[in-house]
Length: 197
Ligand SMILES: [Zn+2]
Ligand SMILES: [Zn+2]
Picture 1 (cartoon, rainbow, N blue to C red):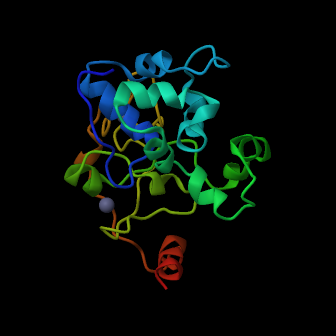
Picture 2 (cartoon, rainbow, N blue to C red):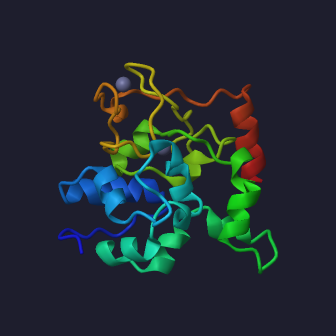
């Protein structure tokens, strides 16, 4: 059991939550991940982190994560895309089918997008930012960023030493950039209007 226990924030992605509880307990995220690793996985891999936000049981033992975090397993699962996607599928579709059919590959991005203003207000990554087609912030009407403004690197979903709001490569504070307002002629705004109807 971790000494410092945190409650997941509203709409927080599991990869964000793991980063927050790691930092609160002076651990690196991959060390925490290693401590709850699934038997099938030999070691944490950044390029597998997208599965934590989709079907976490594929890459970690969710019972162990529930035990060390103090957050019930069902509450952790509700943070992921899994339950939302299953609503559109027959009730007997389980995690194995979701994984084998790769329902997520067209929907969910492999690296982090973010709104600097949201990060300033509440430093955690929202799950909705990982949907490929969503390129704007619902709360601030600005474009989401998909890389570090300082070094242009993509932001890992869960790198070995990831810290929320900080670039893995150059340690730039991601909230220190002023995001661009939505451009009414751009595709993302059309998606916004459709979604808002
Ligand atoms: Zn925002
Ligand atoms: Zn950077």
